[in-house]
Length: 319
Image (cartoon, rainbow, N blue to C red; front, side):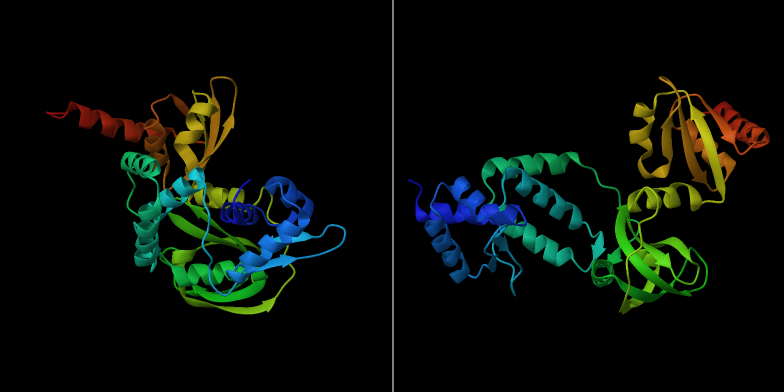
């Protein structure tokens, strides 16, 4: 028979792994009687775990949030995911969390089995991170997340690119991380439409206001909306390009920087934005496949000018 301590750890792991359990499910998993289950739940409560219970049809047990974070139980895959995430966060993606991240990583490394520590070291050593281009204040990020969760309106000053600060009133829907940046997706009350806001361009601490009834998200969901805003609408030139390569080959290489649609077994169409047609052509050329710019029309002059510069560079000594 499993000892009491081992059974308590197993019960705690189950409660942490799912939002709610019925008593019948737990007794079956633990192979104990309902009376033993109730005693084990009481033992965990005396150790500080806030476990709520309900009776009747549909009743069961649920691990709630207490005044302090209790010890967590992680399986091998969860421990690997947390360790790699902490190592990535230690690089400073969110300003103000570097020391806390390193402290949490140190505690995890101390108790992690040697086999997992070797896996984490191998995976982390194979990953070459790019420098983060914009850090986000953890206080601002937490405030925005709380307003999204509680459906509270926000007021803040926002600087779009090099423009002056503007005052915005929004109903926040969610936060999306993309391309080393955080974006807030919100309904802009003054403009009457959905907008994306780079969190690092929000000046000062946003002010939370009254609650609101959440709207249906934009078509495709928040991630798709940010993807479109980042890859297309953020640039002066919007284009459609046909690439002579299958979508399955091109899509992983473009990530957030363009929308890829299949155009047959060996072709695909990319919708993207760029500062100029020449910049777009140079970007498409870097993919190493033939391409045609479908939109906008009349791009021949810009492409020929780019080709002439490349030919001159190729003719120079040492090229």
